[in-house]
Image (tube, rainbow, N blue to C red; front, side):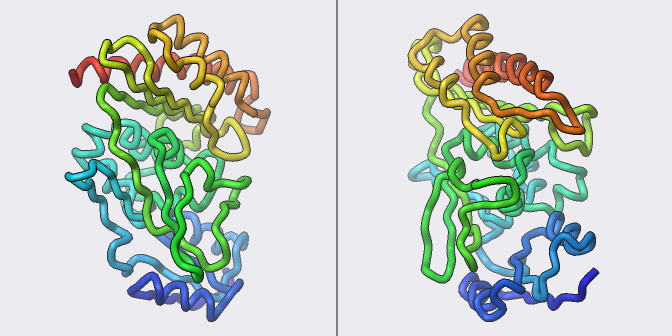
Length: 293
């Protein structure tokens, strides 16, 4: 492993200044569960690692009581999200995803920001944030800018972040009444496994509790980057939701996906799992809505 210097700024501005001083030889680090592995295995050879752990505000998980907006700091750990009763009760799709990331030790250290910025197709944390219409706040040498989480990714391991930019937080608008959401990670085993496919579904129903007012169907490991199944979402909009309609939405989502064969699974199998689990997660959303009436 190549030797590096460890820098520990206390403000975002200081972190950005460090990065500017050392240019391409510096790398930001959150929990380190991905970065340290890459450094040890020689995939990454930075001269400087800039830790974000001591920057105030990046570890905050907060819901604005006045607006209903949820704010998740980039350094909030998966375990913090998993243990939050607010997340469990009001954002079950986030709980479903983060509670299945790695081991307990990884969740205690790994951060939601790192999960996003690592930009792997199998990033469990990205799917719920896309489904919830999350917005990423980025901070860099030129100031702040916002981008929808769904637009954050360019290709595997590459995001739209400019040199020196870092992820500050993710904001999520308040969910509409009669909304349910759910995520499933499908793998070959139950624990410590990258997903063969990840499916997140969010449904908002009209006041009749039957008609779909809004749908989000988000897929991981179904394309080079996390994706939304827009055609399937449009198909559900305005329709009375039942199992038959959800089966058809699953077929449309599977056809939209860009799954491929890999050493971990065949494309046909991934498509079948999308068909099956879009229906199952849709039915789970309906159950959540009805239980919260």
